[in-house]
Length: 207
Image (cartoon, rainbow, N blue to C red; front, top):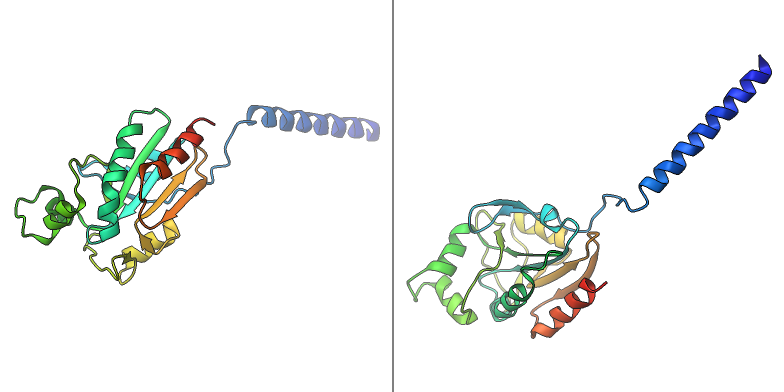
């Protein structure tokens, strides 16, 4: 019985080793499930509920965080719009902008007819011809504070949450995540030309 017990243990050990080896082979391309992509959820301008992590899954993802009363954001928006238009139909690409404003403020900004309204004035100031960016508004009560031309995240619980998620306390902030959800590019402040972002995107999509 003692000899049989040793043999039995050896068979069990070998079986476990085989199962581990098979699991390793089957999961050689599996991901760990960890991601740098912030867990931001909200509604797009068309009312659809979205999760940033769901959108970004297995895709190169660009996230641009901005606010209406941020002058550098307004100067940058036409560039962001052009970059989005260039890659929007690429199957391995995702793009989302996160507006540090509420839905009502975005409506006034995008669709207002009163050119004396401060929100509509900012749209005119941006020199946007068209706005088709997939956008989540994340502040239920609105946020319109700025200092020296740059808007800083502060003074509200929602703002501090987004601040921690994107690891930045200034807008605009642009983040690029690879297909595994790893943060591979971060730019704080306004992007001054398309090439800064398109060069990075092209190099990552070609990998």
